[in-house]
Amino acid sequence: MKKSFQSLLYFKVLISVLTLLFCGILQAQKNKGKLFIIGGGHRSDALMTQLVKLSDLQKKDYIVVLPMSSEEPDSAYIYFKKQFEKLTSNPIIMLNFDKTTATNKVLNDSLQNAKLIFISGGDQSRFMNVVKNTPIYTAIHQAYENGSTIAGTSAGAAVMCEHMITGNQKLETKYTETFNNIRYDNLETTTGLGLVKNVIIDQHFLKRSRYNRLLSALVEFPTHIGIGIDESTALIVRDKEIEIVGESEVIVVKKPKGIAKSKKENLVSIKSLEMAVYNEGQKFKIQ
Image (cartoon, rainbow, N blue to C red; front, side, top):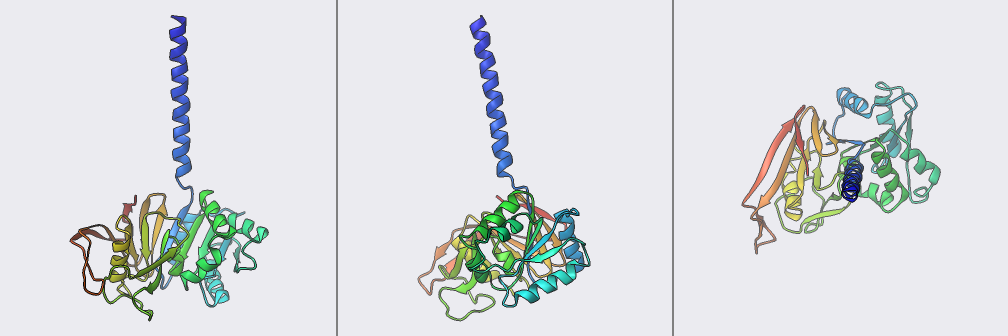
């Protein structure tokens, strides 16, 4: 009888320990930080006020601007700072990393401890060429995991993904703002920050009519969710939930079925897919 009681007690303790471990793993998997992903274009004070509110800045907190996407990093920083100084009294600093400063521990510690990190527009490939496989990448992820808000606009939106659209076409030598058609193996992607998984993001979406580009992405990554963010509009990402804020709309395409490649010029066909249109205040979940 005593042995049975001990066995039962041991079993209960074991279940309790496993439950605590499982809950701990789930908690560790859930991101503490938030993302604020802007589709480019004009950033109104109302939209940026939403970012300030989301970031929950305390007196001791500061903001870091990463302008490496921009051809004119100083201008990108000044534009952001001029607007944000009207909305918050927290310090705003620029960390314009390059290959010579990418491993600087002091600068990366400053980045990691920022409560809000803002990535400017420009060229997303230029940004990732500086950040990829460096302590900067690690510092951004650590800040996010610790509860910071990571924001970006235009190119700064594109870099949020694991598979980042560069804007180039493999089958065309000349850059165009949108694609003329939907072709297999035409979309060029490269490694992004991977802060949001299983998602492909495109920006300036309605303004530049980038449907063909996003559908091309869905052909290449059919298990992903394609999200097109229009200008002056943003996604707030809280772990797996996305909320829309701003002036325009967000297009979501997913679950393509019956993808087939044509013999003619790499054209493709898609028998069906799911599509939704969202605007401010609406929410949806990702995988």
